[in-house]
Amino acid sequence: MLMKTSSQSLTEQLAGRFAQRIRNRLLAPGARLPSVRLCAEQQGVSPSTVVAAYDQLLAQGLVEARKNRGFFVREAGAPPDEARASTAPATGTMPAGWTAAHWMVTRRGPSAPVNATSLIRGMFHKISDKPQPGMGVFPSEWLESTFMPAAVRKVTSPRSLNEFSLQYGEPLGDSGLRRALSQKLMALSVPAAPDQIITSVGATHALDIVSRTLLRPGDPVMVEEPGWAVEFARLTALGMHLLPVPRRADGPDLEVMAKYCAVHKPKLYVSVSVFHNPTSYCLSPGSAHRILQLANQHDFYIVEDDTYGHIAPDHATRLSTLDGLQRTVYVSGFAKILAPNWRIGFLAAPAPLVEQLLDTKLLGTLTTPALLEKALALCIEQGQLRRHCERIRTRLDGARARSVKLALNAGCRFAAEPAGLFGWVDTGVDTDALSQRMLDEGYLLAPGALFHAERKPSTLMRINFATTQEATFWKKFAELKKRM
Image (tube, rainbow, N blue to C red):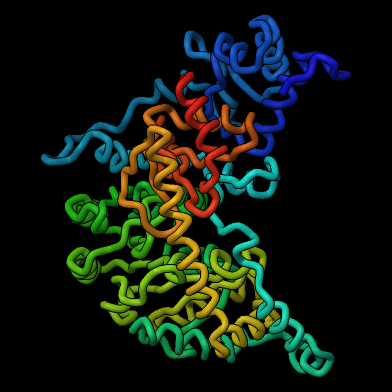
């Protein structure tokens, strides 16, 4: 709260609060600040104090005033909004059956999601000691274990360290870990030999290796929408032409995919088949078969991100299982289930692609650190990771039941059947605006705008079932929601 007894004036405090959020990307470029009247009401100050604070932000170049629209976080290096709005779209005739939105994507491609890293930056700036509903990982107390430190101690004995740390590691990654991962994938009926597996610095790095190997700037790439905006931004930064495919309960919109294939000849499709982020949808066998038919017919590869597979049933439908790693590249990691800072990921690829993918890894990182890879191999081989995943799944089931009940009591509805780690919740109000009000109360939300290739207002938000079990959060949520 703003304090009248502070050494700073109320104007300076308010401007400083907004400035800090803008610099930390908790207020993303393009985001609209509350109106002067609303901000004054929320902060318990006079409208003149808000006007003075906004003037300070204008002077610092952090916001811009748009005539008759309000104040917006400035997009560094971007032209004024009026100039962007006056840019005429490319001409052309929209094919029958297309929506206007998808035709515009076809003609000019979506803009880069400027808010993509806002939630990630929020993870590195502690908001408060309260459980954070927008976080993408399990609470640290859920991940605490004795087997991980024991495995690290074992591989860091003086003899072990001298054996592997005084020279470069294996280019593909630690051979023991790759053997363990091969066995783990075989249990999912994904036929990956150890020499088809490449370790990486987390799953995001694995996705980057695949993109940099298979794509060139300007290549069309199909992505699921809603989806993880960091992936949208990463591909956009590489110069790719994003083609958002609506994600449904059973899989992607196959009609939209087929039209994209006919018009664009995409090079890649990026999919989260199991416990999709943010909806937690799982792919159906029928949709999976049709996707693979399209891939074969139109000659594109599929990257399957199985980051959430650790908390899913083994029998969940995976494209890599049905395809046998012919047109699919399987990607996963252990940050979500084991330790966010271990940063161990991997990919399993068709044999003909392995050397190209390895070249890309070597250009970026040479090798990956073997110490934690060897420790992880021990955790897998001794069954400790499997038992840990089972405990997490059981605990998550209970947390989900409690969170769903609280969310419904707070006036929300679920836009997708609750499952996995995340809930896709319709709040009935603009979650961009709501997220700023909740920040004042010490809570970081994940508003729906984060999960679209083009920024647009949304009443949806993603919640983490593990961190939304407290009635205190939902009480404050319902209170602020009612005021909007």
